[in-house]
Length: 450
Image 1 (tube, rainbow, N blue to C red):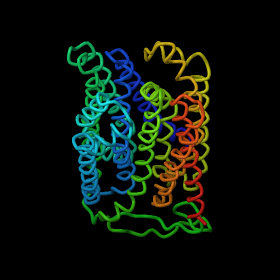
Image 2 (spheres, helix red, strand yellow; image 1 turned 90 degrees about the vertical axis):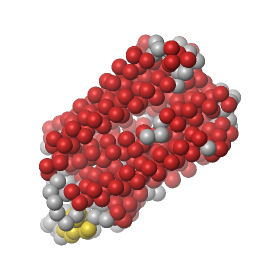
Image 3 (cartoon, rainbow, N blue to C red; image 1 turned 120 degrees about the vertical axis):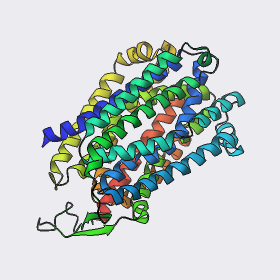
């Protein structure tokens, strides 16, 4: 069973690592264009707002994996995904082209008009990204259902490869030298479109023929007495019941995921908002843009652990093996971050790989050390999210998102009273949000079982 879990998770882990390495290349390219600090700060704000919306639609992967069983349920869920993407397109459009964006970006973030204009230009260019990502994640969830994680890995590797190639292609061009923000935007599009093409191929090759024509119903388990899905108090299989999959059911299943992940993605814009208003605002935003991407490299893959409980509920109904496997993964991630960020290795990564100067690298040190504790919270959270997906209990995790946002706002304001670099305040506040979110999820899941 451990071997099965390992080979299921390995392509997803490799994919996540390659994705994070690709971001380092993009950041390295930005660091080599004219006005690198301003460009990093501008794209940090723009991508923070875009990732807030992209994060909500990215959960369509888990939604399709759990809910889609035939062609009727496929089309029901796909219509919902298209609707989500359309709404997000309009929101980004408002931020890019209306006075709402001027207020949110220039006034709330207290940035200068030139930087604000660059951010709004980037947002205008990124309008279709949430819809593209939503469809990609929706189709990749179907590949997870048939356990073709290798196709998902190939797709993201191809996307990252194209992003990296685009950096080398466009970096020396006069257009990018004149308007540096175009470099990360172009790299983003090359990556997401390539990934979508490969995912569509994988869906047509391995999934489409498995979707039979049927009544469009889904099957869920009756959960009794806090036992594992599919068992009663005596350990016998419980009754299974069918539900017609309607748009209303999809929304009830999805909205807690969207709210939770949306607020998770909103954490970065919230932190950017407070950090940008400090005396060292532009430099702090540039530092955060670098450390977010670099620190996410060794722990971001832990989020994929939430796919294990729904994918292997029949092989491990009690979840004991999955719990142990999850704990091992968390400890490996924590040990890797200690090695990378508590030792001089961090200067090699920052100065040689990314290309920042030594003084800038020194300012990244403390934020990276704080980031090394993130795997301890993320591992527990991912496992609990997986249980919620498996049991169709997504409503239990809904309060965790607002709790995370509240903790971030409180801590970042409290730390503003101390003489700390803005990036340190931002990462410390983010960690407090992670811990608070994990505690709330654990409390809610335990309460629902009771």
